[in-house]
Length: 287
Length: 278
Image (cartoon, rainbow over all chains, first blue to last red; front, side):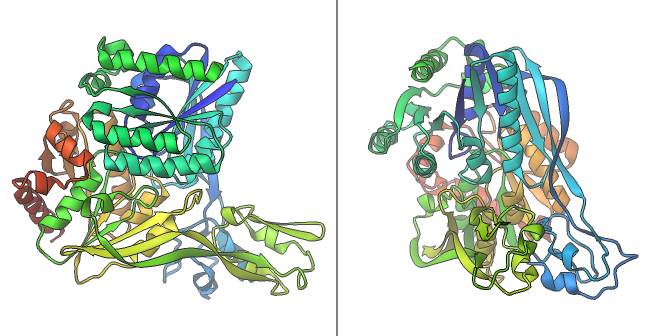
């Protein structure tokens, strides 16, 4: 079984649109949306939820005013300034470390686990999909990403599927690290802009740090041929295999508005390029 | 006044709006790039960096001569960052949240602080704009403390414009918190709308006034306009879907330099934000 993770460093380069097309083209796979704090793949795949459960992340401290003696021990100990002067703990600031709970002399602080989101196993027209929704302003996105990946792996094993296609989050932080560690191959979707090039550099350093085989493709490569060439040079210098390029097309946005993947929606240079790209990715994985 | 430029979805034009607003408004201004995972504002403002600081967070260091392996440190730690195994104490600095619980609970004062590097803070100037950003160290997972450090540079005598990271989880909340106004940059597509709704939810939890900028306003459909009207959130600016704008952006050219007419639009946007805050 191969796990392919599609990330971008920079947001908005077309990761999800590409994953939706790969979903349409790939056979016998499980899909996993690991962009848990701004998930979009479901908007194209229109999943029918078959199973779901709460995602319980860390804990949150809550002061019981009836038991609290207002001694101030918690205020002094908290490293996150989460306790107000009138002894209420701000849920957003609370890191869930439990220091106040441990040191409260009146035993007045409860420490329940918080429900941070939900995860789902769904059926789509392109096969099974595991996805999730992190609660707004919640933490532990990395943990939820790991949970989605584990569920996808279980499902693939159960159903004898030989591939997991992962739609990853932007950036290089916690949820990205959780998305890429231990995956078989990473495909970076970049764009020919100075921001795209800069962010490719940083995400490439990350996958290099974790020693993950890394591929790249340039979306909208014809927007700026000069920067596209710089990206190609960068890839060559840093051991990233540049798989291919996808030309700019308005059909990408139109397909999204229609709730379809590009390869379902359009027959143009862009959808052809995506088919070619998929063929190359598949070939790489089978080699 | 602190104005936070955020989006939910990545790549909608946060940095474009933040940098062009900063150079347009005339008042003394700071631009703080809090997208510490992928900071890009410097590519457009091209500031001269005059100050660099390593930002660290305290993690435990155990003095085994003082330790009697009682295991209290491992019990209090909620993040599995420290654990006692027979006669050794294992620490996992990358899992540590710097709550100092282990240090406080140790009966033998065997645990002291050592710094773990999160990244760097850089400051400089670009013409009239005071520039600050953070750069998260590669393979570091925890960005909020670095974001906090960037925000500590806010000068209350100036207008502070903050470029936020995408998404709606902890780094975004750390960035938005304590702002006077949040400007949400989106695009008129199903992805843009979906992520805008999440971002609006986050702003509502924090309870600040907000407005919307629709970038590539003629590229998709009217879903964002209808949503904004239904929710009573003002659309404060629209930027057309123009290949020339995209090309200028691709070269790192500021929109107001490539299209001088845009400057007045950003000034109008600033006027609307000020009105809304007052």
